[in-house]
Image 1: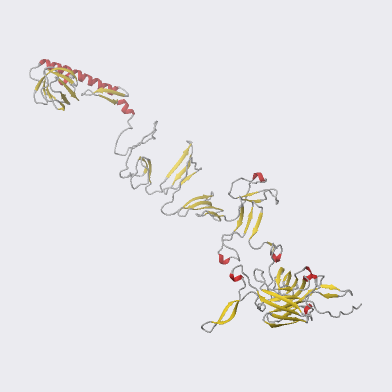
Image 2 (image 1 turned 30 degrees about the horizontal axis):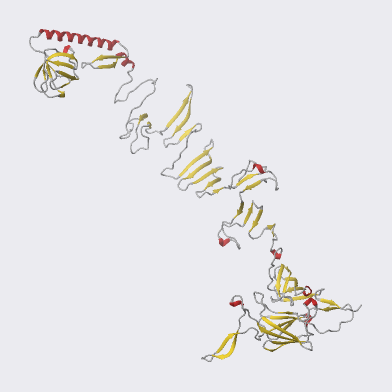
Length: 637
């Protein structure tokens, strides 16, 4: 017989043999001194001594090369060896006695037991009694039917793993498994799986709570995935709702006991718009994607900030709040706007529907909370009446608006200014200020004063416009344009002659009877007078002349006057130019030089200063003259 169990390792020129997986010291296998070892070098060596199950010594050194993990064979029997037979038989009896003891212990013991295997290793196994106690723990590919309730006194571990193909239950019932996830599933890897094989029924999950007498439904999950709870839902973390493939809206619906919807919160995840709805579907508060908030009806405020110190400091963020139930300047009012600088009202419509000066997005009204002022773009109304502002009707301004045509019935009412050259203006008023009033746009009344060179030259004019052109103006007599002689009669004191370049003239009431004519270029004769007005109010004799000026108030002409012996006045006018200022403002005029060029065309040159010239076309000079004395009627008492 041969013993070949395990492998051996040998070292060249060494007598020790080391075994792996061997049991050389077990006498029943017959490995004893004197036995023959067939070594890896195919030579035979005598066993000198068995040291242990894994070590023996040879009588001679190993002659081969060093080797490990090699197969081997030991001759364990040979014919006629009684001593070997006796030793092995005794070892076998001992082995069988030990095996019998192990068998008895397995049948009669409890818990676990340990025995030694043939190769010398230890093995711990449950006894029969323990197996019978734990008989539920078994492996089977068939369904296991347990007729009674099952009580687990320890946690139960499920190790079913079907993630390669996805576990599909074969029969109806409730199934629990672990790690079902596949690439086609939406489950979680390593998760415990609860599966309802509903068959032809509705399916889903019910969660009950029982006290042993009754069972109450705590929650249910429908086959479509809807969770219904008898109570609320508590969370210590974030709640996430993710849109599905069929709709972009996410909703929270609030229903009464009858299932009628009373409110909802929903989000359009495609746009980011959020809506809060209440009163069924009657009212919706919409938070638009661009940040706008649409309120269906009104906002009310409950908390009160009744004192100035109660107003929150939110830096430059505007706020609205409820103040004290009052209307005053000493504390916040019932409704208050809190603002860092001010607030405004702007139009949102297109410019095509807006009024004069109004632009989309630009304020038409604003309050400056720092300065304590309110501003309106056009008009402010009390009832249906516009509030008069500084500048309206000429009030509170330093330069009143002009009346351009006194002959129009629709002349605007108010305080205005005018000049004599304007259509319908009263004569003798080179510059005037006064009041115009209108009646239904059909009639206009005017009262104006005009200034003169001296205080005594002031005139007062009163007029009435009717039928768009019928204009009646009268002048008022006053201490500035009248004198009283020694007999107590009022006499005219301001005869004025307007002399034009053609020699024609325009007279006022006091200068009626004066005759003017042009003698030659720049030479005029005024007759029917007694020289210039000598009244000191007009500057004295020789000073009663007003000449035209340019835009820079510089005279356009030179004036030379001479009172003739008969009282007539000779007026001579000359060109007047300037050496300073832009060329266009120097009053440069061209004149014929009396020479011609090669083409027989006259040559023009700049007119020298002082050249005789007519009064400029469209302009005139004012002459304040002394009229011949007339007989005054005797007063009638």
